[in-house]
Amino acid sequence: MSEFDLACGYRSFLKAFSTSSFWFGFFLSCIFIAPFSDKFGRKTSAAFLLICQAITTTLTIFSPNIYFYILFRTLSGFLVIGTSKIFVLAMELVGKRWAASTGTIVQLFQCFGEIFCALSGEILFESWRKQALAIAVMAVISVPFFLVLVPESPRWLISQGRLNDAEKHLKWMAKLNCKDASFLNLQVSNGLQPLNKKIICASSSEKGDKTINETSSLLEKEPNKKSFRKKDSLFSLFATKYSAIFTISTAFCCLAINLICHGIRYAVQGISGDLVVNTCLLALTTIPGVLFIFVVEYFGRKYTLAFLFLLSAVCSFIVPLIPYSNLGGNILIIFTMTDRCFAQAAITLFYVYASEVFPTTLRSTGLSFCIAVSRFGPFLAPFINELKVGSNNLIGFFVFGACGVLGSLVLMIFGVETKGKSLISTVEQYHYRSKFKTDQ
Image (cartoon, rainbow, N blue to C red; front, side):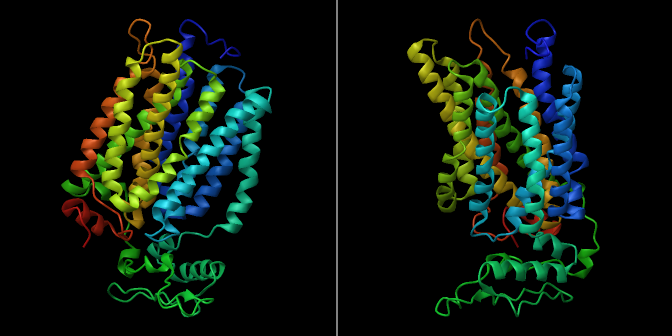
């Protein structure tokens, strides 16, 4: 802020806009880049976008003024969509038994990244430019490991009619998990034909008949050859009245929880205490979200998410009412962190839920649409946090609380339960689910 002289006057507005510009670029990428993953594959798209983002992050280092900084931050946001492709890929590599756990663990590493950024900026690097360069280098180094160690999504390959490639990747995955996949044979008939599920553990004959490879067992029904040639698009999610309402309601819930989560992150700057410590505490609030895996598996996605929305809303309504004092400052931090804990748990589980409701042919596109709508949340959050009544600069939390209540209501009215259900494959299945709130 001091380097670009953003402390006063109209330039203080540029401070908030420099943060929002990243999310504006993210919003644009969800519209223009997101479909590439459904066309060219999860793995290829993610690796390419990760390298491009490293390049734009490096360019940010050479920003001579705030205007170039905003430009390069917008470009970085435009390319960061590659990280969501990794999430989709992880969800499609496992079966329904491990879907919630996998999605939560992937997002858990975001916590480690935030802590690294906070601590490295304080301890290791003298300026933000050196820190940005280090992050770009780490991104480039990770790409070769990603390309070698992570397979392409078999679900996406099958949706594209590339059965031989899907079979090759499934056998490679089975080999890593000590499974016998020698007789796995993916064939498509005129109708819908179940896959061979006799992939049993080679090291356990006693449990062999009961141990079925989760990845292949969930690929039980895939489109026939005619559906391989069908061109689905984002508009397919809005083809019927029920699917349009369902898609919009899902995107709204994503917007509500992102506004709360990112709003709390930016509000930390106005809360007493050390900024680095508060940032690390906020990052650590991701970890309790792992505990909700067990709650989700028992109560289901829909009701757990609605409950988390309400808990976050209650905390948001309380925060602005806490008086400023030595004791009040500590209580304020406790309620803020608790609010973020519930919001982060909700956002972690929501991405798992959103990945499960969309069909394989449009899973990346559907999830990206929800993320695109949700980017208005972090884009508006810095401006909402500027709301003040007298000396109270936390009035924006009332807005966050209202979003939590609305998100919970929308989810309960229009949401579906995905617990224990296989990932759907076709748009027709999506239309059926959105109308009858169940699968065929």
